[in-house]
Structures are given as C-alpha cells and as structure tokens.
Length: 242
Image 1 (tube, helix red, strand yellow):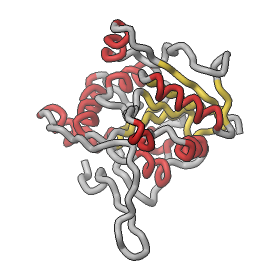
Image 2: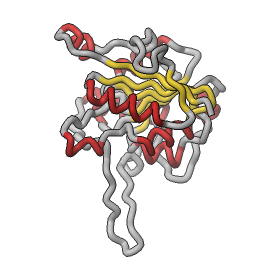
Image 3: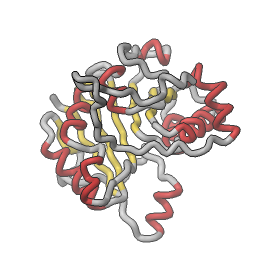
Image 4: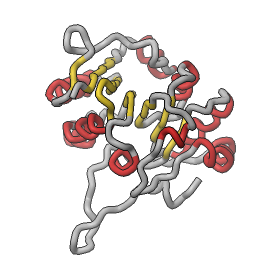
C-alpha cells in the first residue's frame, strides 16, 4: 500500500496558508492487527487503488469487464460491503474508507470469499470523487450509517449536504441510484430534506419518504442489536433522472 497516496492531501490559499476544510470524518487509525497489516501488504496490489489527483479510473481496465459499478463510501470494517459483492458477482464494487484497520479487515474478508469484483481505496471520498471518478460512470452510490454528528454545533460535518449530493449526482449515470441508511432519526430527516430538494433526483419511496430495507443491503450485527433494542433504521433511495 502506497503510504504517500493514502494520506489526505492539503489545499492552500494564494498566500500559502493551509485552507481549512470541514471534514465529515475524524481519522481514528487505531492499531492494525497482524492480519490486517499483512492483508494491506499482500493484497493491496491486486485489490487496492492508490489515490491519484489527476487520473480518472477506467473501470473496464480496473475490473477487466464492463459490469456496472457501485461505489460505497465509508464501509467500516467491510463485512456488509463484502457480503454485498459476494451476492452480486456480475457487478463491481469500489469501497472508500479512511481508516486503515477497516481497509485491512475488508481485504481479509474479500480474500477469504475469493472475490475479484471488489476494489478498495483509503482516502477522502470527496477528493476521490472529484479527481478519480468520471462523470456519469456509476450505477449506484451507497452510504450506510455515516457519522451522524448529532450535536447541533457539529451538524455541518455531516457528509450528506446539498453540494455533496450534487457531486454524487454528477458521478451517477442517468438512472443511477443513491442509497443512504442511518439509525439516527434526526439525520434521516435531514437526509430526506436534502434529497427531496436536490434537483435531478426522484424518490423511489412510494410515499416520498423512506423505503423498507432492501434485501440487497445486508443487515449488520450492530443493526440487529439496535433493532432488538427498539432502535429504528431508515433507508432512502433516490434515482438520478436528469
């Protein structure tokens, strides 16, 4: 794994001072297990993609086929991401995660499942989208259980914001789907408000609100635990129509 390319790049103002950016995440690298570290060393060359600021990905070369591509932002430890790719062998999946232990765990799971339709990146998703993903190239974008930043003063850090949604629309093909899920009701309401107001999307919910959890999204152990405790989960799917 290229340590240089997996770091967050800095942007600067004209006078050379760093430009302060609002991040939707906090880097909590944690300690890599031996297995995760070994996976990063041995599997990155085949399943990893280094960040490059001036190179658009050619998915037909990356996967050696022309199958549809789903992009997942923030796959955590990768369990549901790998399960989804395993259940859809004729589709391709690219996952972005900024935490190295999660990337390592995902690589381990992908190898164990003998998957070839997965690629992972360890970088800021906004920079990847802007610099490496071609417009109208994605069949689906999915963001499951992003950090809710539940304190009011931190709400601005939520990844689902109008400008970011428009960036996602730009990268989705016409007919492509944006799928979001959260277990925080206030964040679900915020997501719904942002997406309903976003031009170029239609809600796939029959009542213009939320959808039942689709079978294509595997249920995680944390989600099961929350549901057993009476916590809610909200799924949203919006399709790009223009």
